Structure formats: C-alpha cells, structure tokens
Length: 253
Image 1 (cartoon, helix red, strand yellow):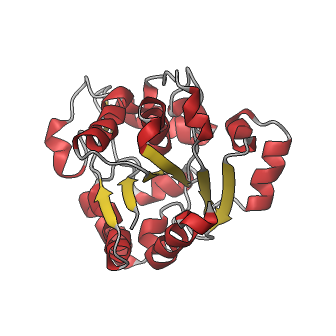
Image 2 (cartoon, one colour):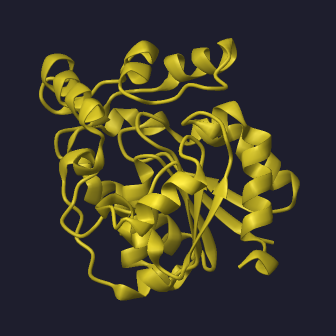
Image 3 (tube, helix red, strand yellow):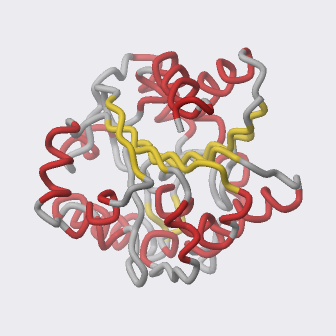
C-alpha cells in the first residue's frame, strides 16, 4: 500500500483531485487530497498574510500530524513550488516526489518568476485590477488559454466544475521567494509528468542548460508523458491515476 498526498494547483482545492483520489483508493492506497489555506473548503481563511510559506506549512503539518512516511507527494502546476518547499523541510517523510505539469523552483525564486511572460503579465494585471492588490483572481477560461494554458480535454462538465469551484488565491503565495536549505531534497526519487510539453522538447531544454529545467538533469529525475491539457486530473483522471500507480510502484523506482 502506498500513501499519496495530492496538492492541487492555483485556485483549486482538494476537490479537484476527486476522480483521481477515487481510483487510487479503489486500488487499496491511502490518499490525502489537500486543500491549501485560502482555497477549496478553506477559502474563508484567505488573507493578505497567506504566502508560500503558509502553503508549505500546510503540507508539512499534514505529514507530521498524520505521521506519514514514505509518501508519494504530488504537486500540480503552482503546487510544484509548494511540494519543493515541503520536501526541503520534511525530506525524511517523502519516498517520491511527483511534479504534474510543474517543476521545482530554485532557492530565492518565486512561482511568478518562472511564469512565461504572457502569463506573468496576465497575473499582475488581474491582481491589480480585480484582486485588490492581494488576491490572484481566477481568470476566465478564455483568459487562461490566451495566457498559454492548454484546456485540451476540457468538456462541458470539466468547464462547469472549474468555473463553479475555483476561487481567488492569495497573491503572496506566488510572489514570495522560496528558501531551500536541505540538500537531502535532491536525493528523493522524482517523477515529472509532462502533459503539454513533449519529453523530447523538455530534454532539449535540459541539455541546453535552460535555468527553468536545470534541476531536471539530476539523477533522481525521470519523465513520463501524458499528452493532454494542463489539468490532467480533469481531462484524463483515469490515465493520470494509472500513471501514478505504474510509475511510483516499487519496481518503477
């Protein structure tokens, strides 16, 4: 039996993982789908003081309070920054890291620092114009696509769920730089799940020394493709669950 901790990306709560959670539990695994502070059913806790460190602490507290060990810690999109911080603070509790459509951020960087220019411009405009200077509002689906996010695989039901349940996110979570102090994080077996970037393209960027992909050159990394849009828990939950099961099984390590 494996223990999975699933951390959702921007604007989402644990609810976003429901289809994947059911499939993993059907195979006999323990699953914790976490809602970070200010998101999901914890949206009432949003405030100006919520930042990346708050979200990292959410994950670390879950690991410690539940006394979870040898965990497969999964982060989607924005949550790549969160699970990187959690791995830095609780490496001894994590058996594997999984980055779904995401990757680690480096010491001294923020999530926003690694956003593509068009996505960063959209984010900064939304925070200023619609977020009161401290909230990151949920873009419309059209705005997301214009900012470079792929909605491939989103049908009417997926669009409805996203629009109905996504909530604004405290902007401090994407502007606060991370502080990484524990080199043990770099020894954790790590899987990158690629949905909108082909593996060949990612490997070219790694070989070229692109700073966003530099850490992926480490021996702890392996990559797996799941061609779909940016939110595979919506568009391909069956295939995502199967990939997590297949790629994190002991024989796959």
